[in-house]
Length: 329
Ligand code: DP6
Image 1 (cartoon, rainbow, N blue to C red):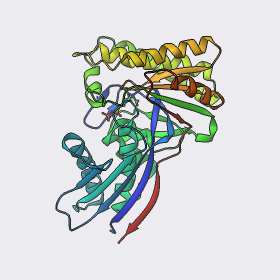
Image 2 (tube, rainbow, N blue to C red):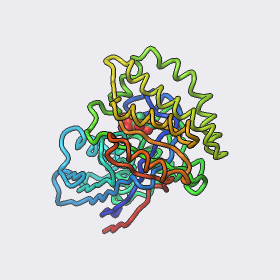
Image 3 (cartoon, protein in one colour):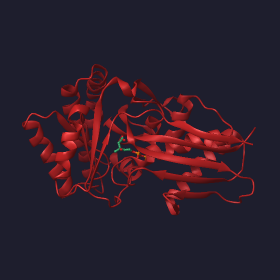
Image 4 (cartoon, rainbow, N blue to C red):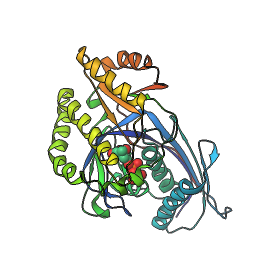
């Protein structure tokens, strides 16, 4: 088999129905189905080169040599690719993001999606979208949703062999925007992996799991029929519930900051003033403001005025993970 070098690019995604908790943590098989939209302005670009002269993997993320757990996690993913390709060659990995890491934009989603595509291609493999999504999921659960295009559903499945994401609508389907309001550039203290593990200690997890199928179908229908008035309340409900589970886990995980609360309160005010905008949150203090693209600039301008908001990024629905170039020797 030919090996070589490949560069790929993948978008982060924002979940409308969240992945929070695993049925199988080792293989990242989630407790529930989830739905997301890819974010066209939040991307990771990754180059992987397998090189027989290397005696260990070299991993550079955002210009700096990766250390500790994040390095180990990339190497474990390269090992999955090497096992699939039946090679042992070490690799050079160079990755950069278009946005800050660890503040509540899923850098692990775009990161492991881009890594999965670049590494498999550089290893001479050409996986189907479904197999690539399953591979990306092993690196970071939400990464499976950054493989297909546009609006995406992750079918939880029952095991590692049937848990993958599919596109339910292309990016052009709906002019929806995610106006990301970054209120803290500090890296969060508790990562999602620890959050998923702690979820089962919350006494409210069973209530969430019971409520999810109904909410999932509402969100799916809202996306397919482009109904923001149906989507909005469901996505706010789901975001708050994720944080309820996190806060009531043992020990509690608390991502909230005063700035985040101020952005949420502003959302309620803008809505009372007639703007159709709803918030969602990931595992971090960043607030994602979901609206139609016709309102996005106005909402971005309003968000900029909130003193806690450091940066605003307006995203449209993004495409699938894509190969930029490859050289096989
Ligand atoms: C809150 O996919 O980051 O963003 O599998 O441990 O890497 P790992 O977790 P990750 O969890 C994402 C959690 C979330 C919700 C979501 O994107 O669905």
